[in-house]
Every structure is written in C-alpha cells, then in structure tokens.
Amino acid sequence: MATPKAGKLERSLVVCGIPDGILTDDVMANILIIHFQKPKNWGGDVEDVVYPTITEGVAYVIFEEKKVAEKVLKKGEHRLTDKRLPRDYPLKVSPYGESVFPCVSSTLDLSVFGDKYILEELVQELQKNLTVLSFGPLQSNGHILVQGPFSAVTSLKNSLLLKANSLLDKVKKGGKESNQIASSRMQKYGSSRKQSKNFVQDTNRKEQVVVLDTDVYRYMEHFYGNMYKKQLQKYGVASHVVTDGEITTMYLESNRSDPSHLQRAKEVVENLSMDLQRRLRKEKIIFEANNRTEHWKYTKTCEHLKFQYPKVLVIPYTTHIDIIGSSSEIYKFVQEVNETISFSQKGRRK
Image (cartoon, rainbow, N blue to C red; front, side, top):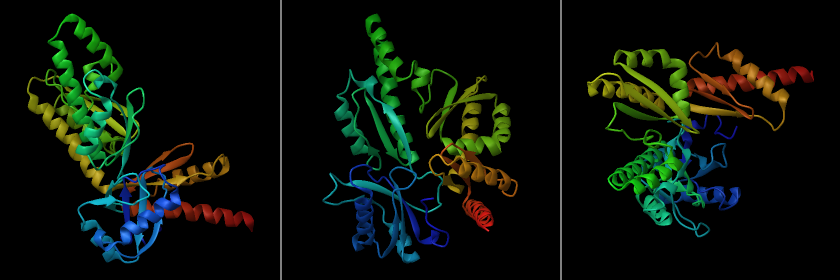
C-alpha cells in the first residue's frame, strides 16, 4: 500500500490538490520536497514523500521531526509554486488519519449554462472563487472534472445548482417556446428540477437534501442505518439516496405540514455524518494485476478478521479492498492482515 508506515504517522501529513499528469511522478515528488523544506512554508527536513498514491492528486509527506509537521499544519495557506508548473496550485494539508476522505473527485455538467454563459469564463470564475479546487480541462460536451476537499466540491455544486434553478425560474416566466428550450436543456442536466437540485433545497416541496461522501454513507448505513432511520420515521420523514461516484446525495421528504420536523431529520443525518467524517479514515489493500490467488487470500483473511474488529467496514472490489474505521483499529487490522498473509507464505516455502 502506498501509505506511510506505522511509527511515522505523527510525522506524516496528507497533501491534497496536487496536479496530476502535468509532470512525471518523480519530478512532482521532488517539487513537493522542495516546497515543504522551505522556511517560508514553515517547513523543514523531509524524510520521504509518498507519491503517487491510490488517490489521484494526493501525496503523503513524512518529515524528520514531529514538530516540523505540526508547524507546517499551522500555516494557513499552501500554494505549490515552481517554474516547471504552468501556474500556482493551492494545496490542502491535513494530519494523516484526521479524515477518511481528504479529497474527492466529481464530474460536473456545465452544458445547461451554455445559452447564458461562456463556459470557459464560467470555469475561470469558479477557479477564482474556489482556489482550493483543482479543475481539469473543459470538455466539448460541457463536462469538467473537479477535485478537492469534499466540503469545497459540495460548495461548488451548491453554487452551480442555485444558478441552474435561478435560470429555470426565469425561463418559466417567459413564453411557451422558452419553457420548451429550458426543459430540453435541463433534461441534459438532470431530467427535472428534482434531479438537478442535488445540493439545494426546493422550497416548493417539503423536501431537504444532504450531501455525503459515499464511503461515509456506506459506513453510516452499515453500522447506524437502523438507528438514524428510526429517528427519521419519528419525524415522519422518508429517505432515498442517489450515488454518483465519491458523492452520495440523500433526499429527505416529509408527510407532515410542520417544516421543523424535516429540518430536525436533516440535522440527525448531518450530525451523524459529520461525526463520522471526523473520526474515520480509510486504507486500501491493492492486489497485483490478475493475481486471483492473492485476491482470494486477502479477501478471506479480511472476512475472518472482521469478527475481531466489529466496527471496521470491509468493502471488497476486484482490484483492491477498502477498509474503513477508526485510526487505531485500521492500523491494527491492516497489520494483522499483512502478518497473516506473510506467515502463510513462509509456511508454504518451508
């Protein structure tokens, strides 16, 4: 796994927002070392940089001393600057293990704004207002890849969907022909206002929306699903979710006239998800390509260890296994998995 080894965690930081594909990995790692060694960035001696990692645009920086890592964290803003880069890139720096998801990626469809905005100028405006995000190239179909902290991606989608709903409201006040054009364009964006309002409330309906990191939602659903659903039922609120890659949207609908019940139900979900966001972290066990034996061994070992770690969520995939839980349990779990596999391999060689 491309992560810092145990014993180095207190000297390790997670760095998010690194531009991928611009330079070679070795050159980018060298630029990161230079950045975090500079006194103006409150840095010091760097022991190692783990880059690339399984998460695109994320690196781990391991310092020689814990106090240097702590000092770097206190610097408010980090901007990656080097003559080999086309521009400056804002970085998000976090303690290793502080959060399960320091960075997410999302593909946005901006084509709905094509009649009202020059899309290139719209992207420039978004980049200016949300400097912590990294934007990919704008595609001919209006799609663009955005990467950065979960909260910033959510803020961006809030802003865009408010714009979309505002445009739709203006067109509704126009003629029949304008409405037909708007309906056609909004269908590309999400088929209806209900689908296009993923991150905003529709005040015309008794409905609220909560945006969650997909893995946080999976953990919440697995371990706390019955608990929070009973609370939603108490408030007369039903829920359904739509998952789009790393982001899951939960729609809450009320059958009661009092809007306070819906707001309280939303707070139940938000408070639980925020608490999990702070406490959880994630590790990945990566399989060698087309190695079915290795896949089987790791999967079986993880299934066996789940009984010893009842609060660890194991999500198997064909190429890797995601392991989500508290920081301390995750490292014990992964360590036992690796030790079990190593012991079995030594036994076979004997």
